Image 1 (cartoon, rainbow, N blue to C red):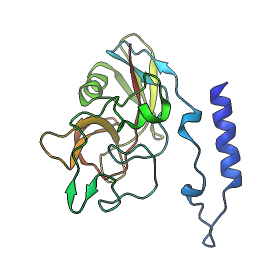
Image 2 (tube, helix red, strand yellow):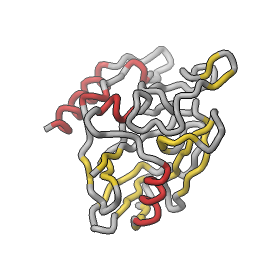
Image 3 (cartoon, rainbow, N blue to C red):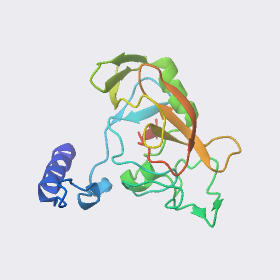
Length: 196
């Protein structure tokens, strides 16, 4: 029922969006509250439950509101040329977009949990931008293919990258899954998890 309500909300929002003179629909005019939909928890036979869907939108690391433009100057935790320390692991904190937007026990995954997902699941690329991850117990989830971790491509983890205050661990989901350091101001997706 929640999924139907969320889908109808998105449809109404899209229909209500205004196009600019150039004919492009600006996503900032079409925002849907993320709290309207919290995904289903899927047990893949791993240490945590994975959300069936992404959080929705793209986020800079530690910011809890999605946006459509990302830059160092626009990053909430970059002040006067210095990165503000908000924690080496933000899972479950006030900086965790999954916890703030979906509530309950939802949170951002750690880098270790993404590595477990990559190492213990079987991956199938449908060739149309959809990747299927099947866990050891046979249950599965789908990902939007994110072949690389770049300015606006990839998935965030909740972990800062080593001792670098301006980087956090990001994850690429494709036929070649991996994690790497990514600049915190960039806009990446979030796939929430929940403890069992």
